[in-house]
Length: 301
Image 1 (tube, rainbow, N blue to C red):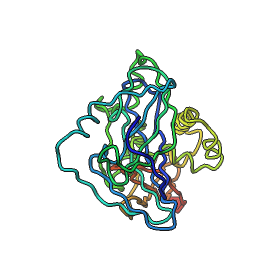
Image 2 (cartoon, rainbow, N blue to C red):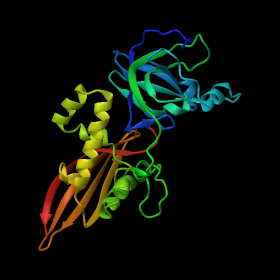
Image 3 (cartoon, helix red, strand yellow):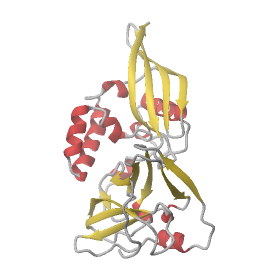
Image 4 (tube, helix red, strand yellow):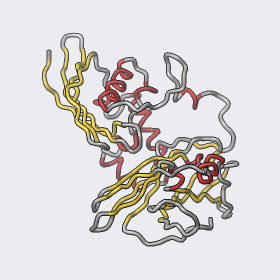
């Protein structure tokens, strides 16, 4: 990719696959972009409402051929519309993250291995002389065709209606209530809709050590196994227990982080256990996700 020249900057720009499964040419490929201030001073940048003016992706095959531009990206960059943006400030050590769909930027025309690099424009893209910061590189393995069964679609369908599940902009307490109700009905698709599985898994030190040493493909496999084990209740039983009743007690949140305190009851044949759960949520983009929790046993009734 030719264009803006790279320059040294007091921030690190990292990209990683976000909850990625097996990828086909027409898959949505969410990528998380993390901007971290590694300097000793406050770092300021502009973030465009139309993200194509703040970020871009270089996607090449192993033979160094560039993937063609997506129609949506071409339209966004060439639209004669006002460019709206907001100023973002990061104190030393602070991080700002958001998620972009790679297929909004490029077209993957077939199976193969692609090398992806993120490009961040702190002063917005204004042409070939724009300042740009390059990220790390990721390797993406695109599989041929699609499975003939509907197994992939079943993973995101509403068991009640058959409609495809979509994340909504719910408040933190609504996300927690939605997730607990889904567990009460054993609706795993809904249960996982607002759970950041990767970060939940990484709360376990041994899994984190293995994850940090693994390749991108191995990391995705680890997350898939963790999800399967939660459904089987063979690991981390506290988060996948089936409560008979619950009450949202308290919610605290900032623009990016939230905690929700919940009293949950678990009915057994001769008694009921009462536990106090604290759910931790973050908002990497527009949607709140549960990424951790703690449990405290309170009483037995």
